[in-house]
Length: 399
Image 1 (cartoon, one colour):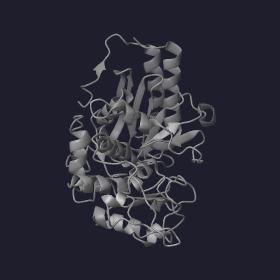
Image 2 (cartoon, one colour; image 1 turned 180 degrees about the horizontal axis):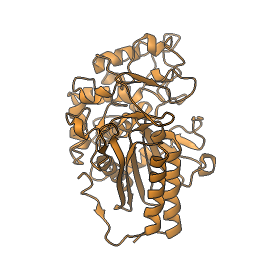
Image 3 (cartoon, rainbow, N blue to C red; image 1 turned 120 degrees about the horizontal axis):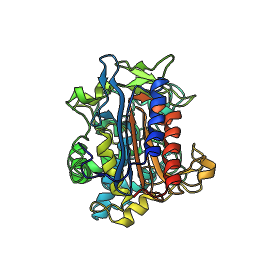
């Protein structure tokens, strides 16, 4: 088990809470919006709900297990972001220094040919002027023309080569003068690897996953039997992802190029923004560390810096949300139509995942699924959030 550090309460037996969460999961499965899921809920450090439901592999009837492994996609970002903040806390990384100190060859230009300073803080907050290939309108976009990988395909290139390709594309705006979801965390991964003078996978293990005993989490796995099969939302039921697939998360975009075999290929370059594999229990362990203040990895001041809105003044695609250092921050619950407390954190992953931390209520929630994009941005995500927050608000603090 990967949730050993969290004690399952023997005193919490709130039937209404469990029934409400079970209903959301059962409905998503019965309506065939999801194939399978693992949901964990911690409240003030106590694991109050845990359930694996549905199937990890529908075609072989392999049941979902609590320790099933998932392709984390953008849930890699908080892990790599925490690693960078550990280096800041150790005094080894200046978050506001020019990243060329560690990545001298990464010098993307503006359209006028100038080479502006880019800082680690701008990479962490997605204010560095970079973009994503999958957000381009078609295959004639600049990232596509440069052969950039978004970190979920089998590109057959190295991390350094992908950074070279990213740097060859003009910046979308001057760093620090806008916000745009981007390959910034992949660049941050390159920075971490260079600063630590070791492969990124080793640096992440040293800085984060090792100290937190996140033994299921890495950039690949050899245990194919524990890995969930990915499915794509479709009618009348989700379809199994093909060996090479492309699915657009947003209308008007070319879409993400998926290669599910990447998770089983240790030679695939380590994508800090999208390339990790892990379990729900491991990820909950990371969230609980941050919710509780960061010790022993980070001082509370560094967690507070991660949780601060670094995109103030910019309009993000989701109303009511800003962005911190590695995840979104809830600015305005009313604008977001969310029951979460102001300042709550959340993000997701394109393979079908979501998570949120509501520090005001002492909540950490992880919901990993094998169905995209329902498990990332579909009805399941909002139904689960509303059920959990609603029940906690109704019953008060669980003892």
